[in-house]
Length: 336
Figure 1 (cartoon, helix red, strand yellow):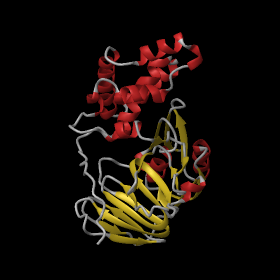
Figure 2 (cartoon, one colour):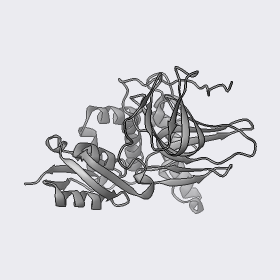
Figure 3 (cartoon, one colour):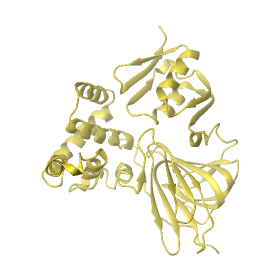
Figure 4 (tube, one colour):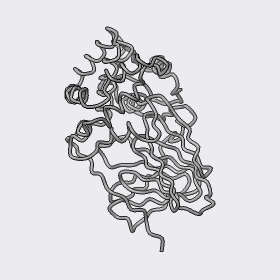
């Protein structure tokens, strides 16, 4: 009898600062230490004031960043090295974030007693920025397509093909393996083993244990981490939610579950609040919807590569207007 995949469970903590807020705070810290414009400073201030979590994340990140300054190759040292060796160019934001994530203070991202998901995302084998998608060819002939703000680790060995979804969303197309090694996708809530397939897995919120799985071709088996001996088969055209101890089959796949792989966001009577939250994943900065408008239904297909165009399209058919405090801070408000 085939043994189900086994891996360590990581429990989310509702008291934690959301990982996307930590990532944003780190990004702001890097941006303001490079050579900020007045608009950058203003936008950061607005971001910090918009939610208590933002200010707390900023204060912790800034304080720990100062400690790192004297103990690792910090921002100033990286910049000085680049000046001494101009052929190397200016250090990238990814380099700086990696210093924050892996430098002398591991505590930077171990605020609650374990390695925070944000750290795993920053140092993953493959990752994408907001609005970016990345296609990855696997050694066995398979393929991954990373969606916006996503990260994976790839761990192929002599007896297993393992892909670990650290954050975000990924489309996987598997291929037959000459060595007959099993393919396993590991998530926080459990393992997914495909059967000659193409499928999408989504893990968008580290505070909840829900992993969304939709199958386009073939089938997959879902193994909850707290019930590894059990498994649920999901066939092509079906969608399920995987949690630590169970699998819930959904009545019907979400509209356009794979539309992002074609560069589109498809909505079928989607509440505007949900639509704006989804669209916000594909752009840097803050995108908010006035609560009174959140119930308005949205239907249509919208381009993900140009989110400003999508917002303009919404303003043409709904009683809304797009208000921009800066290029980084955008709010959907009632039309006046």
